[in-house]
Length: 310
Image (cartoon, rainbow, N blue to C red):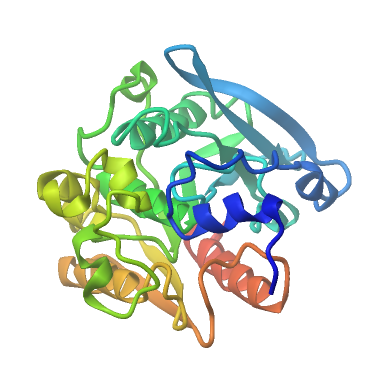
């Protein structure tokens, strides 16, 4: 298959290869998300939740009118921590029609600032939404998150650090809790130094790999920073329920990453389900039968956590 020039940066970024020499991928179009919203949905976009120097961190909130506060699910997009935006097609936007508010968030990219800037941002977004829950008609006791690939990593990390004082650099995190009540990470890294323990499409120890660029050094040279970035590091019995999704044909982020997370959560006594997609490769963001099946399973998980007795 012949690759045209415009697709090369996207392919390289998806594989975690450095793209400094390549053009920036085409800007994401929010219209596919907006087109999937039910009639009458309330759309609030580009809300500033925090600042990093001159950079504004933005989020969107989508919801239907309701006389009762709504459960919230935050979507964290994937893109090797270094490309994409909150306007990437949001596979869980259909939850709006099921009575949820859905928020998508931007965050600091690794090329802009290395870890932990990105998780500081994610925690700030959760705190901002909880602090302003009344403004957006959200139930602060029913906050969830989902994300794929690097967004799956950030989702899992949010789920395990919510009962810690880590990554609270933004002032808003001191005003409202950033704890979540349910999380669904999809095909995300959870233990960086074990990525290459099984069959994998690349050598993640190289300085050009996405995790190495996230941490600012080859991962094998900074094991302490790896531990700091690993969701598994922070697991405790107080963590919220997890619904983990991964494909058994994923060799970009191998299945072992979700298996390790699931086993560690179970050992700590945290409710955890590992949903393995048979024949599934990396990511489920493309609209199609597999995505629809994944989203339905994830929706059932959030329904079970947030709608019992409601």
